Image (cartoon, rainbow, N blue to C red; front, side, top):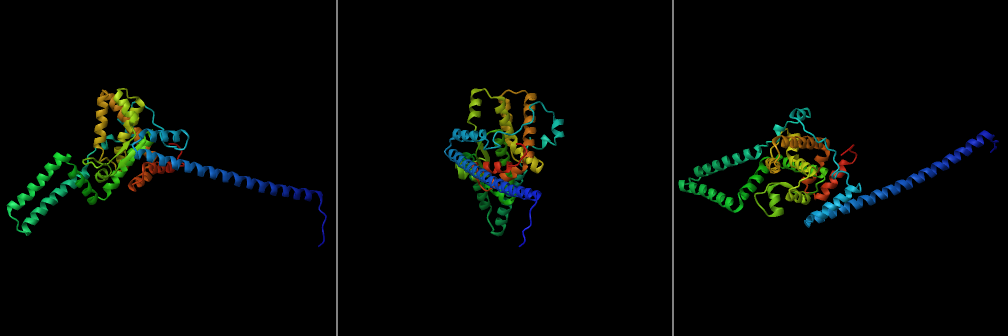
Length: 348
């Protein structure tokens, strides 16, 4: 081939191109190395978080609340748990009912919950039982004394259950029957308990365990006449209560967690069905603290506003947590679900 001379400008351009290509290759190699190191560190960090969450589960299984809380607090301080105790709360002041309404909160819809679902199913079961006895008496030509014997047997069973188990067996049967008759009831309970779990975690109270049905409670604790619920690592709070010196911060957290279940039902369904015990216990606590009516109202209204705002802000997080709890995931696994769902959120 015929070689053509290269003028000075062309030579400079070729040299610049070679330098650019070399620099680009070095930059890409450096970036790949950085990305590899970053991915490795992220992997190590993830493995470390997984191990610590497993350690929290192990401590909770051993009823070692102090160790579990210390592990969670340490992870939060190191930035490994973004949500634990890091929620941004609304300013603490006195709020009027009008201000709550401006935030689309109608306290009449959830501070006096009525469990109509369970009541209606219980009534229907009673009617069905009576009808079944009447039908049996008609078709099988039962004598009056036989029908009376069935009725007496029922009341005998109920009396023994009341004395021996405080009505626990009957409550267990009704709770189980409600879930058969009303398939949506189980998820509603899970929504309620996930509200308690999430708010507690966000305000810095570590959940200890949870149950979603009376049967679940019986399987886990071998006790009757106890409803579904969420327990917390509240040793520090109980010590404050026992000493008679309850801090304002502890009371704020307690109130938010107590109202989380009814607040969740209000947001999801427009009104609360369950949570009567939560509201009654909160009311009893404020009375025990000798709060005036105005002081109690101020505390409850702030707690309601704060809790509802947190639940609205983290609706997607709550939905993921409900699914995890329905699947029976451990507390540590539920925490991981919360943290994963918080990924990318503007603020907690």
